[in-house]
Length: 433
Image (cartoon, rainbow, N blue to C red; front, side, top):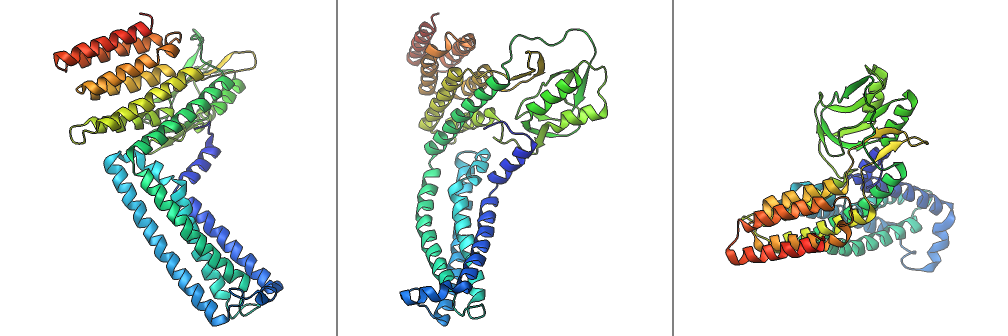
């Protein structure tokens, strides 16, 4: 995750789409075919003929070879599409439907599709020139098509390996956790660059008004720089009550404007332009989405229908690692300020407290029937103590620790209750309580 404005957000959506990479590679293959045919016509083909096979290939053999390669690549494209659909089906059933977009963004699958589609396009273009171009047999182009086909088959073997790995739930959780930790580092750096929210220094008294969304959808990205520029230009302070991932309706406020009794249409349009809405929630600019994915996988694993304890434990470990990263990086809510430190925009971006409360509350509600899971959750909170006890969010972790211990002890036999209470006491000692 990184900061995204409207233009960079569109570019992100293109890169994340399943068709963009294969489409771009097909265009590149068409251009490459045109260039290689031009080189053959310029005399390269005749220069290569004395080198022997495969450069000495004749017209009829070249046509048969290219026809075979074109047919084979189309067949493999169908195979890759089928395997991708199987992967998506398995992922939706075992891990959750919200993981499907991550599988569609898999670069290995996209490149595999692009290689075979590009090879097909290249081969067909070269085939159309055999016998009718400047030279009867464009030998450089034919041999290039052969090399591309061999490379594509080798890449396909790697793609199958990656596909098998991606179906492993532990691997999926590990990749989400790694992405979340990386995004936390980026978000923390961005917060330090723009400014970290301090005490509430919103203006008191004076005129103020509210700008509503006038649209419905999930907040996929907020351009804080645009909002800061708008506030600076008009001498205003903006309080944005929504965060990335929030669902808004047409009447929901997206900003409170301090310094104006009424916002004109131009000002409202500028503010709304900075808030990008979509029909579904995505990870485009949303730390909490990735955290929710880990919590969702853990909750599904703990359900009676699946009952996969060790998947839940793995997800809790990755959640703990992400919270440790957030504390270590000093992740705080962003505030946009001018050069002299005056507040321009107050945000509700993700911080340690929000992440901890969201994850620990949901895990507590879904997992306290399992004493092993409860003990791991308490133990992981204890592991955060060296970082959290001196952090402003230390009381938040202690509050959730008490709730987890109380909830778990009420749902387990006496022997497990004693173990939970002992684990909770050790965690409190680690926090210095």
